[in-house]
Image (tube, rainbow, N blue to C red; front, side, top):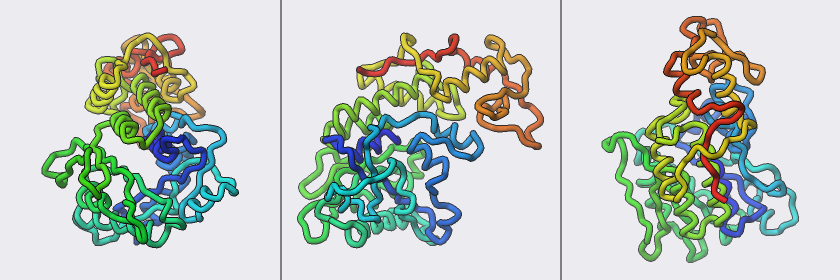
Amino acid sequence: MAQFLLEIARGPAESKEVLRPALYSARPSALKELLKISKDSAEARAMTGEQSKDDPQNWDSLNVEMKLDIPSDLMAYDYQESGIAKISSGNSTGGAFGVNAEGSKYGYLFDWSYEDMGNTKFNSFKGFFEHDAQNSSQACIVWVGDDGQGDCNPAAYKMRHYVKPGTEELGLKMAFIHNLTCSQDQKRKCEEHVFPEKGGAPLILFNTYLDAARAALSHDIISDAGYRRVHATVIAFFGVYCRGDGTTRAPETVSTEGCLQLRESLDKAGVLPNNSSHVPTQWRAASRFEQFCSGCCNGSAPNGNNEFEFDGHKLRCHNMYHTQSWWRFFGQHATEADCQGHCANVTSSRLLGAQAPQ
């Protein structure tokens, strides 16, 4: 997701000056200090590849060790700090890419229904053009949401037809809506509009971010090289966390259903996972798997150790993400299923993975 958002920000011309993505959240603004995504949170650091100071459970499960493929001279700006004007002038130095935490929008305490949540997000979208954007004639939004809480209906439906003040241009460039696998009776109706009628921006439903990147490429939203970078990230993730048949090696990170979706996306892209190449051990997840296997497992069976050391932390054998604490004294050894699941593809100092596209 992080690599996809970076490519969206850079666009088909692979700009070296971009706006940081902001969140449009349904979390109540009245409780923002408790619920907001701070720039130091594990979620925000997952957008930069920097480790959080929180429990490893947080930043490991968010795959913070996966560094973004980002040019060293890229400069990023926040829209609320005249970022659009700074990019247009070309006379200002930006900072590192990441989440625009301070510019993110939040909802209301009494947004009880998905209809209310969606309307609030649409009003935040309008507010960007009517109040926040320094140069609305050059500003546009790419919306990335899901179909679980009003992001599609009504938010994206309304965004599709919104015209920027004083122009004849649409404010929305494109909407990408993640198709969640929750029960259908828990979701509002959401329909894809790939070939929109006149006056409407495209709305794409997707299962994986590789699918989203493929759609973005076909609509000239990202570059061909940007698509390949997302593609490579998905392949590398699959190589660490999933087996070649699409079953999960790490259910605490991704389910078998998620691995199967990724495998199907890779199949559509013409690159099926194989066991001919390797994932570098500088990936923290790959290195952690190796330490888990050597410290907690003996072949495919557990050796009875309760913990193993990695990166300055003592981690529990039966759950690699949790550090030791006073209430975690029992049942800490890895099971045979844990060892088989996590260590089946470990060989010497490498994890068998899949070959990235050239």
